Amino acid sequence: MEETKYSELGGNEDLKLLADDFWLHNAQVSYRIVLKKGRWHLSILFIHQDKPLVLRIRAIADYASEAQARLYAQIFQRGIQRDARGTFKTNYDAFNFFSN
Image (cartoon, rainbow, N blue to C red; front, side, top):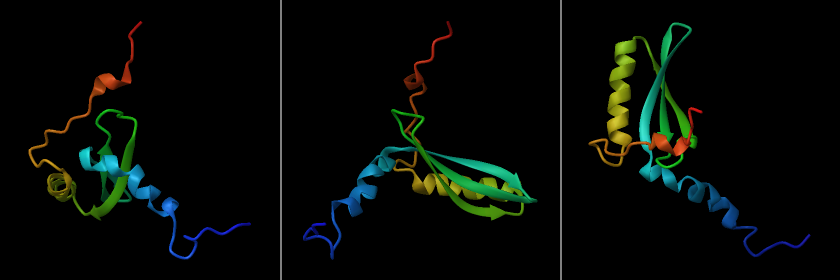
């Protein structure tokens, strides 16, 4: 098996993760709060603008009350969004569903 000159320093495959997730800079940011075992678990969702089925979910933390979880969710959402005014919206017409 032939070794490449990048074997000690890493190769292009090591940076593939960054290239694949470059769309996150322009993603719509949303949140999800779920009750599990008496704690409210907060997850942040990154939704691709043009392809709504492409998304990433990151677990953030769990909280004692729903109000506290919702407060932190809104704070995280505003902080993560590229445009704090929330102008990035998912194009739901991208699904191309027909009612027939």
